[in-house]
Amino acid sequence: MDLVFLVDDSSSIREAEWPEVQSFLTSVVSEFNVSRDATRIGIVRYASQANVIYRLSSTQTVSSVGNAVRQMAHLGGSTNLAAALRTAFQQVFLPAHRPGAAKVGLAVVFRSLALL
Image (cartoon, rainbow, N blue to C red; front, side):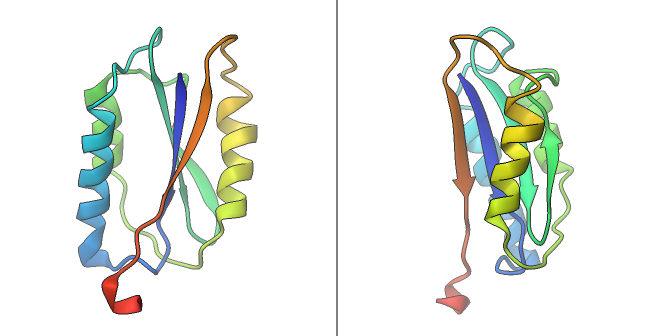
């Protein structure tokens, strides 16, 4: 399976809550058999714009993905999920096509209780 996380990094997440987002991602990733031949992980971060944090062609180990997640600083900005979907498709899934592998995009959206 090729699994790409679309991570909300907008201002709807407070700076103090960002470590919780990182912890959640590393926890979820650790549940998969991450390798080039099993589950490959990609990460697209989005706020006003989207950018690729981790590619399906990157080194595929739980620790390397975890390191990439821990290095992500919180950006803030508006929420542009459309840009994340477009970026995931064009810059992550297409360049690293693997015949027969399921392609899954998972939007990770956190909302502060103060905003609800």
